[in-house]
Image (cartoon, rainbow, N blue to C red; front, side, top):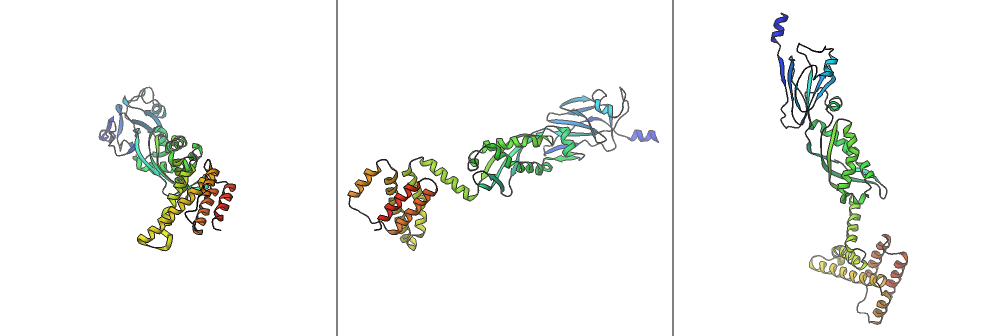
Length: 349
């Protein structure tokens, strides 16, 4: 009876794995009731690693190449099974193949805005997304920490854990990058480098090697985006205050066109545009008098000329509000603001 059982057994003389390209990271060679023949051939292709596991304990690890399985090529397994210098009979062992190919274009992102601590703005919330690529760097560690005894373990099974590690390290990456919060959107490469520095050791703990990571978009809160837009506008006009006032006036004209005169249609548009033009003239004149070189001489020349336009109280109040905003932002000093305020109020007399 024992002889018949021996004859019915199937012996394995070729062990190999042909990947299907479906995102499989770990695959267990099907053993069923079969045993590995002494002197069997093991083929490990490029971008693969094979691991022999004996009763749950990792034994020998093979990189790319062709091997004849003997006591010389299986030293750890030979020790675990207490074989002598040679073994004649077939043996049982679990064999796992691991793909070490680079897994590209893996997505990461913040499903909900995450809270970041910033030295200038306190607690702020942002959203970001990008992609990354990785490969198995330590098959033995990956087996013991992640894939275990599963027949198949794929990229999709690991996706949630890796994305969680990315999100967990974003705050530290921003802090270590040295990039001001408002400049994150314009320094995505530097942000990605800081994020990679945080993630590499975290990935290595589970046998994964992070190849690269990109930050494709950073979305700032609406209120901070407005500040960034204004900063960009200031950068466009430089230190020319006259151009800055023109920029501010251009931003204000649409608001005046919406509400000035309470009209609608062409009449309302004309009234709104007229108010915007009047405001622009007043602001440009006031700023030129207070901040431009030779302001005193120009002011004296202007006073000698007869007035050609009457400034309405509404225009004066609007101008004061704009100048107040400039003072709040630090563009005008308190003394400059007070001087212009006094000058404008005189025009109401």
